[in-house]
Length: 397
Image: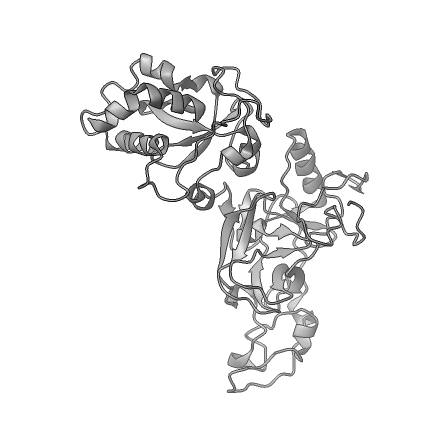
């Protein structure tokens, strides 16, 4: 009874309008309470959420903390929905999930002390002359005005718990006409290390294979059980955690201390040839896609982690990185693989970055790299060059 009185109050209606609270038509329910996200924030925090061209509005669902791009016509202003009776019957029967969403909505609007930190934040600016940073939504009333980003922030739980849309791959998968060139097994060298019972093990810095960045074949390595030069899938990777960065979308940070030289992760995805790479890039440019997850594996092969890959796709670039990408040859299969290794000690909660050194994927054509357009770097490092390419000289103040 108390919750219903709160939601039907005039002050609640005014706060809901200022906070961009709307009713949305949802399959299986009559309506559901949602909060509209400013477009400038949505372009960053919702960029991995699936959408179609007709879905131009980003919303968050009360109760389930889900994110979604929706069509604007599915939304109804809070007060207009109240007049249409959207709240009628909400507190009868066993509609527990819907009532949970309403309870969370009321907690945010009342600004109660028992609400957990970083729960929900209102989006309305107290300054009516605030600088506009988003487009107004034509289907909503004048209450949906432009506002400051500082007045609106997604809850921490929303930013960290909702995974982007991609399929996990433990190893690279060949797609289309890509030919995965392998070094014949008989051509791979065998090191001369000897087995040892010492804790440090064998096949360390002086190992012939390790010096050439070739992992030892467990069936052929003379060091047997004490070999430390193992294939990526047999290495114990340190714990990392995905998080939403301030300017660079998703990133990965260390959940434990990582020493220099430690293997962190393998970069996996779809193995495609140059022709397929060019086709995908042209298609992405036609959609004005801003995010690319491609890495050159060899002269004829590219790893594309856009739709299928692993957590390594979330490593951001930096002009002063604490990690680097390395090409290794798998001694068991002869395949070339890319691993991310720490180049300095990385402390807990520090973001893990490496230098992309893009050679210009974005303007690539069927006959190779063309044009001079490069991607702007947002790492904010003291010695930032300003661009995501292979040049080390700063060209942007």
